Length: 246
Length: 201
Image 1 (cartoon, helix red, strand yellow):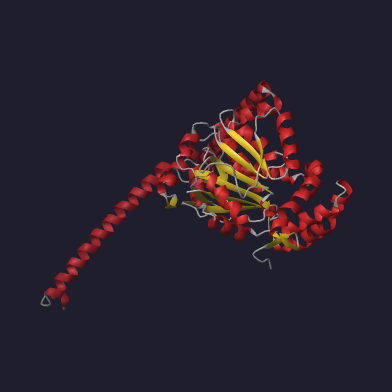
Image 2 (tube, each protein chain N blue to C red):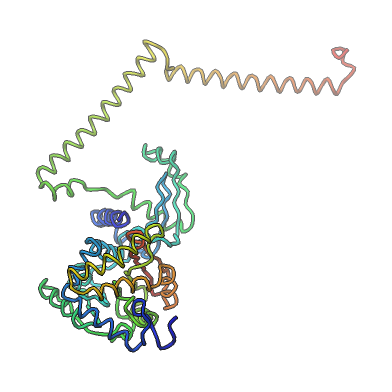
């Protein structure tokens, strides 16, 4: 159990003040190989999950989108195409190394996407500014998920949508296979491809410590969102939650 | 996987029918559950006027139910079948969505042209339309020929005018029987009221 001043870092319990630094170390370490590892770990499925998230976001031309923990900018790139020149996408991440990768990719793609290093628990945006806020594979690394969700709700316009794409609880009959993959194969792949088994061990552990589909749905409702619904993708390996600000 | 594919197909269809988006946008955020024959799915209307498959815990605003028998009649363009579609919940939403779907057309030639080019796509489209028309005509001719054979050469089917004549005779017989029944009832009542009637002895 975590106390008021402690939190999870994978399966370890650490002081709240230490978590952000430890997560930052993990992502500094994996930043350069992040895309490659994502492709290897998910057999390329993460691209399909992200495309699906964009397709159910309801984002159209002229909309304002905030991509939180956007890292290498996969989603920002897709959203930039959706909103067109009259809209705006802002790519943010707390980690400078990851954000650097994303910023360079946006520039290389010729996209005008501002990048901003910020903490999702203290978003530097006014109330009711965005039509859509998305956080993909980032919420589980946040120290105070409830505060982060409340911030995301704050910056949404009325009628705006919050999308949370995150690893979740896999369909029970597959859990043993999934465990073997996560705790045996994943660190091994991390060691071979990114020369960093420890960071990938943390990724596997942090996925297990993340709230399941129903718990996250309730957390979003508690943060002030309504009509919260979720999609199980790949038998629940990943879930996409969507909620509205009303 | 299936949700992603279905959503892409739906959105492609809406994109091809651009007139549908402003109509759908009026119902953004609402969802409809479709129970059509063996297919049970929920659709959600998105803020950009497109459609997507709804999530696992979606509570639909309207439910449209079409049993298999009704589906066959609808496919045969039976107008009266439309009145028998069951709608629960937000009927305005369900009716508008049904209207949008009934007017949507899949421009397969356009999709095909991206794969094989404009001219071959047009030729394939023409060939498909011609094939469908030929199949329809051949089927109708075959049905006409068989019905004629079974009516004239080897009478297994009744002709329309014979059926109508038979129906008219049945109607007349029914009316006659009803009249007779009424007369018998009247006579029975008279006999009961007047026991001195010599016929009762």
